[in-house]
Amino acid sequence: MLGRRPPRPVLLDENGNQRPFVPTDRRDRMLTRAEEMTAFQVCEGDGAESPHHLPLHYAQYGTPLVIGVIGSGATGKTTLLAAMIGSLLAASQTNRLPLQVDALDLRLHTSFRARYVNRLLVQREVLPVTRGETVELADALRVRSPVTGRDHAVVFFDMAGEQWEDAERANRFISALNALIFVVDGEQLSRRRGQRGAQTAGDQAFEVVLNRLGKVHDYTPQGFLPLPSALVVAKSDLLRFYGDPELDRWFSYGDAEEFDLSTVEEESLDVYRMLYQRGQGYLRGAERFLRSSLHFASATNTSPDGNRTYAAEGFGPRRTLKPLLSLFQMAGVLVPPSVHPGQEHR
Image (cartoon, rainbow, N blue to C red):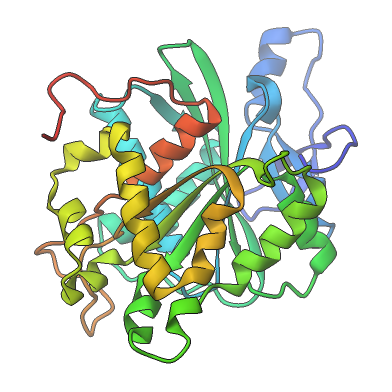
């Protein structure tokens, strides 16, 4: 995906070991096509020691939407992503969303659902914190818009680490991104409240990515990066204890409001005001981009107990779908109008 060499097709065994893919009989086009559905291409940007693998026909849907989920290791990034994808799948399966969503890579998607989505949303387990400097191919989805009749490949990379040890390898991944989700740790915002320097706090992982993007993309005449971004204040439920009326207002709406993208600008202004007062450094994840939106969200809406699980009462993703839908709209995957009849929240 990230290099210019032709994709190297491989097959993977149950342990993830690869061997070259060779069709049984190239003269049988139907058989070859069926076999190709189980084959992968090696992601050359990852180096030889720990390669990522993408579906062999990854690029057949046009330019893929490659989303980097950015934040330091303990921001709740993976938990938020699991809630986002879980919410997206649920909305698609219940026809509440004008998009059809399924796996682009069944093996990868099944693994992500088992390791993260189901553990979080079904078993209510606390997911492990991402440690060190990592770039992980999290999930790959095929998103179809019935409005346009087009299929889109949407790939998520979970990118953690303020200072990646292998800068060259990380830079290749950053250079390939064409959409970003910046995750602000709401728990850190609540802990820093009232502390010296809290108003200017930020996330160093944001700076690493922004500096690299600024070197590989031409800025617009107005000085912006020509990519869409969504900035999400995760764990926003922890900030509600401080009586922020703007935040309380957004959490007071029912689930149907998440589908109404006409309120994105209003929500973005409220998030901007809050971060301007409590952590201006985080705003670089929105201010540097030509198209951006800002959101409040909570992957669980509650805190874990001593058993590393979440209580059933009050548990569930809140406002995790809207940032993703906003990003889809900015990237052309979702075409307005995005509100289904009968789902208006006001």
